[in-house]
Length: 482
Image (cartoon, rainbow, N blue to C red; front, side, top):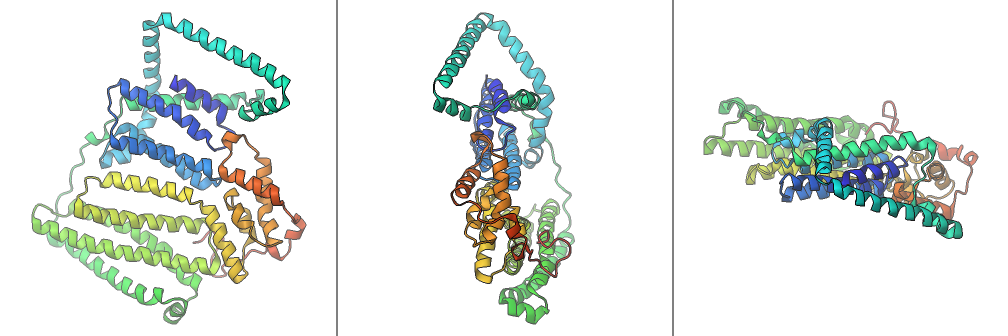
């Protein structure tokens, strides 16, 4: 029944947009997986509950926010956490390969579900008749009396119309595809819950331990390089704009753009170096373990300074040229990498048994926080504040933001306000979806725009207010670079 409910809700609620409908579809799918796991004798474990709650929480992002890019990240992350919950693993193989188990269950799950239905039907033939008759009578009564009440009162008819999805003959193929998606998706979840692939049974052979000098000497040299770089950063970067000009003879934008991506890549490579060192470093003796912790701990601390340096460069660039979606995304990623380094340091002190789960949980929490923080709203807020402070703004870029940005953009004066909100207002009027496919941000933006309206025409926005401010030092699209 839970699988059938998932398929039916998918057909009725999906396809018109994203909102609370994802949660409404996910609830019966989760119940189907829970029933299948219980029937197979699996017990509910604390980490399974953590992953399941985290996945459902991530589906709250599209219900609250309008921007498509945080929504996409939240949906993908919710699927990954769901895979963790179903497989119940705790090691690196499970964290890396569990999502593929859902795909594997698509084929075997169909056969498994058919056999289960056939066996249950053979064992309870006498009970299906009364159930089907009861459901049929209930549906008939709802349709007949619902139609009568709708014809008797226009307000009640409007209420029913707003609650029920619009299903026209032209939408039948589209609805059927979502029905099949919900059906096979729920079957895959239930099959995985009943018989998950045990990825943690994979044997990963430890790397051959290297001589102490062979692995430690290169890392000590790397630490010295990091220390020299960080010393320069602390004296130059945190001295402010005048110090940047004095020491480097570069502008804000040139200095920030010169190093941000390099520092981001350096952070990622450092994580790879730490992983390889942990694989090859000998730890049989207490002296070796102490050396590993000292060398890698120092590297982690120095890498945190690199992370702070990269974020400071981004802050300089944003102050000079405004905040964009790409800039806030890479800054958020750099912050999460800093959290990863802290978790690795904690694993070196307290043990690495929980490290795979901690990294996965931190990634899910980061995506959830990123979506709930509403990056489009932050971008609009920072640019409006910068306009109020410096009188500089890029209206054409702000026009492409989502409904999340409307409250901040509404603070602008005319004609900038109307020019920035005009395209967003047009999109909201065109995409007037059902209640279950409308986010809270969209509803709030529609209410605000309906209250205050757009005071200028497109012709009024073709003058100076539409001139795009850009970074003269950047190559290509100025708002595509960090």
